[in-house]
Length: 353
Image (cartoon, rainbow, N blue to C red; front, side, top):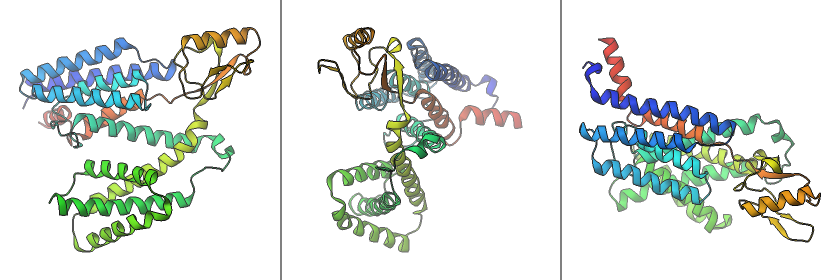
């Protein structure tokens, strides 16, 4: 097939080129001035909707698939914004990036499939985020100067390995008995992550063996009698590594992303790291709660009068920019979501003759 005369090829390249070009520019602005321009997000969304419409006319997607991608990604970004994973600008860009991914790369609408746009993009973005932050946390010199209190120990890591392995045994065993089918890799990932957090939250460690030993024995039995379970062991290894990174980052994050800013540079919406009280015991700002316009004005007035306890600066939580990881996750999704990228595959086939 001559790709020069293939309209699907050009629509795919239009969508991917816009995603990469706009994504690189927005990543630059997010890293330098901590802003995600709305015009860039709107432009990417417009290109995505245009590409989706052209794919619909070419018979490569359906209205139901387009609506499902937009709806699931919208629900996801609203939910993760409410729980504080990212800022609204990051959320809007994620939604636009979901629309800009060609539907030929993620052809399914199954929300629990790695070949579905929304979960594939989110998981790939989080992988990039955790791996980069883990590297940064190890490279920061001040990590060694942090007090050891609260730092995750080898006991935490070993307990996590045991718990995740036991939960894997439960996840492999129960669906075969109840559903008469194995779970997909994404279903296993979701169930184990949620199950582990529920285990931490709802059960004291001294009672964990009651739940974990049956799961561990089930896993050992399945290893003995069954074949084709190795992908799940790789998944267990990936989950354990993610847990190690999560434990380390959870301890380090509050120290690695805090910075003092001059009050003249602080804008409403900034998140103070510490609770601050005024000279008359009035509450000026609360840790973790975004500043209002009135609070910023009050802080600047007190600083000008020399009555602000922190001087003319305020320590803010300084979140790591998430936009570059969304863009990186989109590129990984384009490469791996459909095993091979169709435009790249067709170009290589054409070059080979």
